[in-house]
Image (tube, rainbow, N blue to C red; front, side):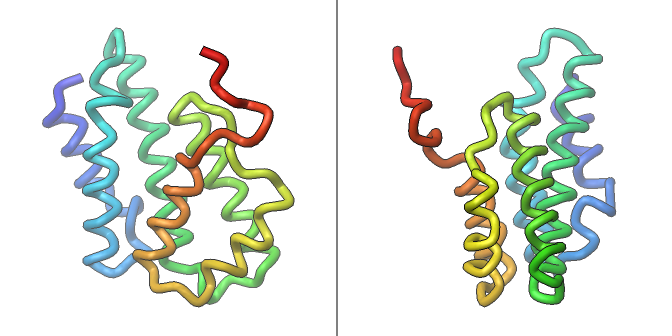
Length: 139
């Protein structure tokens, strides 16, 4: 897949970031575009690239939704949103889900007082963080 086509799909899909302010939306778009080289553009064929791009966009959509609505969501719904985001991230990046069910409620409580961009950063850092104990690199 041509990089410019992938960038256009991300930048022209309004519902990826529609819950965010312009500055926060641009931050998510910049993050998504930065993932293209590793995640999408190395795919073996167009179908694989399109599939990976759709997965990346699902992560961005979930991230944008949480970032735009987290402060108003009841805790049980926010926990469900977080669960979905981390599952999508793990699928898109081909890695185990690094967040345990027991971690979701404390994480939800931790992000509520934060500014939206800080929430986005915490969620991505948590998703990409070190492997859970017991999954140490054996290489």
